[in-house]
Length: 207
Ligand code: NI
Image (cartoon, rainbow, N blue to C red; front, side):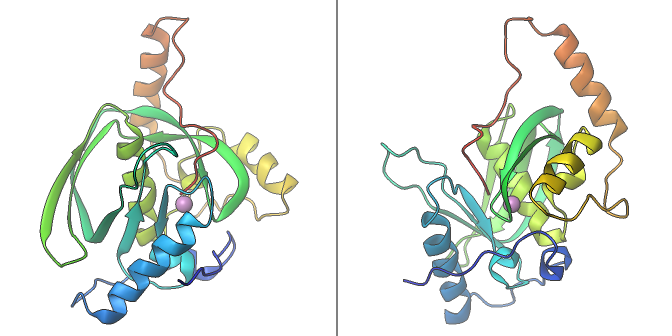
């Protein structure tokens, strides 16, 4: 069992786009095992991407099972998001940003294709702003060198939170212009029942 150190925001590796995996070799299996061991060492860890433990390979893992449920590990190697639609507000954290949670823009639904641990291709659909849908987008971003704060709905509030934890400010170079998503989220929130909370991630979860 190998629990590795998780790189924190500011480390260049987190901003480096990751390479495709050419062969699901023993070395790749070791990275997958280290990802799970490291992720499970955090009570609130639900996902982890290879760059977060220092490897710029296109690999991430998820386990969204609750504490009272059996583990449900999923491995994504060379993932591709082949379809995405809808817009949603997602309240997220990231293990590379200790104790930072902020509202970001996400697609409501995605279809992803990837290879599993044995190198077999599979397709997964995650819909309706589910935790699975949002976690897939969050982890996929890590492989592109994109971080959740790049999708922040309120840049100034997020900068304030980062400053409080002594982390670097949001970099304009990476900030993503998502005016259509933002518009759709605002409309959805306006139309939704005032008593109904917007879908938000459990603030205890990080990936
Ligand atoms: Ni993350």
